[in-house]
Amino acid sequence: MSQVGGLPTRRGPGPIPAVLAEPWAWRPSSSAWFQRLGLLISDWRPSSELDADLEPIRVHLLAAAEGERAWLHHPCIDVLVRDTDEDRVQRDFQLLVWLASQGEYTLGTVRLSRPLWAWAPDGGRRVSAGLCDLDALGTSLAAHDWPWAIALDLWCRTTGGTPAEQSWAQLPPETPDDEALLDAELRMFFRALSAARDKLPDCFEWVRAMTQVVVPMRRLQGRPYSRSASSPQMPGLAYLTLHSELQVLEALVHETAHHYLFLVQAVRPLVDPAHSVLYRSPLRPDPRPLLGVLLAYHALVYIGSLYADILRHDLGPEDLVRRELALAREKMLDAGQTLQASRTALTDIGDEFFAKSLEIAAFSDGL
Image 1 (tube, rainbow, N blue to C red):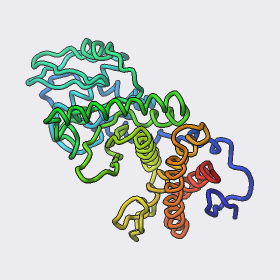
Image 2: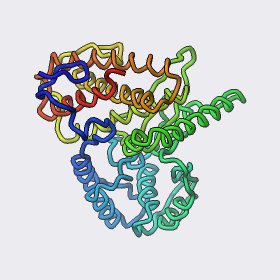
Image 3: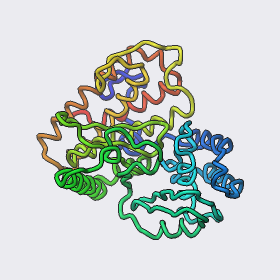
């Protein structure tokens, strides 16, 4: 066995394959995810309250899924992927608005019995009750240019329904200090995006290909550490607390890595469904199933790659970056050892995913 990233692998000796030597080059196929989305579109039964000719709209959505259009990997398709009737009309309407804003389709009109929100990357706007021309609305929203590759959804409007717990939407600013904190955090978020775009372009493109929207979260009082989250039911969406530029980049990489894993998971399970053993995870205090350890390992591989990339480009405070890199690699190796010891519980596709992650882990070795 050869040694890659500090762990033995099943591959023979030799250099890391060129496509994996640069960590941001490996992007798993999204075809299975789009195929599954096509089935969800076929089963979609939008609210009759909208009073629209929806069969042509379904045809447009199916064509976009067949063409694997990147704009579909986005939280505005929430009504297709999340099985709940919560605020169904708003969520159906948002999907139609998002489709209309792509400027490629003729959708006609819908009738709104109450005002609804039409989200767009610049925030969007409220649409009054009555007859709504989707084509005109989509054109109007698209005309408001958003200068960043990743949008903010401050008020949790992409997915509709109840705002996320501990989000600014659930707990809006109540004091001047709250407003000043939120303003400072948003400015810092955009500085982080700008730095990544200009200084780490490969990493930035890898992130923006999967994570299209961020919901900023409130910091919990007395808890200085950062929090982030994502879900296979929320494509393209990450929830982040915003503490510093470096932390924002780490959290974006962390949640984007999860989204790439979710794509692979859409093909087949990564872990044998019959395997129910729980394990220690380096990122959670509670015992986790093996899939949770694989999620953590893959994220840590890319967090290590981020800090290695920062060092290789001579960016950031070196002592801090080296400390964070060492911490990420320590946790990564811990999760890797657990996966190696239980590797027979991985499915064929899970083992292949782990093997590629092992190869990418070498990018942050030796720095």
